[in-house]
Length: 408
Image (cartoon, rainbow, N blue to C red; front, top):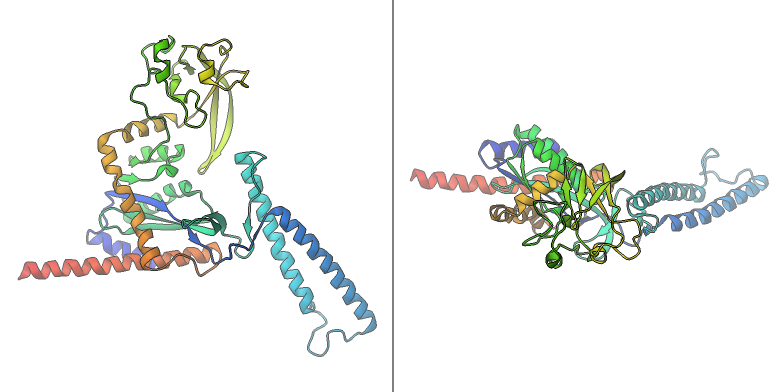
């Protein structure tokens, strides 16, 4: 299937239907072949295993008692070197529950590392453990897979596909780009992606490959930010304090109100005070671990802006975080703020999402038939190949008609 998918892509590229001028990568949710009710947390699985162990011990004791009274326990049709069918069934169920429990504990540890110890327990599927319980596009939660597609803007052909187990879509875009470059012998000129892909590692990779990427970066948009001033070590005038940007979540001063001095490696707050580097900690995102530097102000006590800057419970001073990818983010924000970029970015939706709309609505693929990530990947490759084949036939028919008309 992989060879057939590549062959269709090469034919389309040879006749100019794939040009790699611009690509869009996106993902969607497709239900796994799994009941939404066959999921459990680690605590539930531990209880079920304990009950199953009791049944196992009881069955073994009963078998031993029967053996002592009757050497022909298994009858003519059973072999003495094989477990009875009831014990074999219990053993298979115990093995499946143990595997699910290991998966649930690993998922809980990963979630607690990312969200803290108060994170809710993870629900794991029991039938297809490669699937993940995720929000459905139609609403609610169920075991799902996340199919991915990278689509060319010329005629909408899918140039690379993938299926992941989980929601870490951002980690797939660079490997997909590498496969496209290897298959077609060139990098795309532009990439259009939604905000989920705008992590620092991806932004750095786009710049190193000289790909003009377009992806929204979360930030506060203001017409005029009085914190941006020629002398950051001087305070912002009091009559401009109300114009300082506020964070949407905390309603306190946003980090954009703090100006970074690269030469001194410090931030200046709106009052002109310095936030110096205090410590570095590691944070994990979809693409890996990032070292984050923490800058803290030690002059917050008695500051007139303190009520707008930090919570009342904060006694140590305001902090601002920065990692190595902040320059790439600022460059992306500047690019996306241009009117020309906003017009170009309007292409993303119809380039990136049209294949999913066709595959789901016209081809009816809203739930996978197979189980296990490897088989699901093959099934998705079938769907993408069929999508491209149909498009190729239609384009060849159109080109042939144009040649006939031109000849007459």
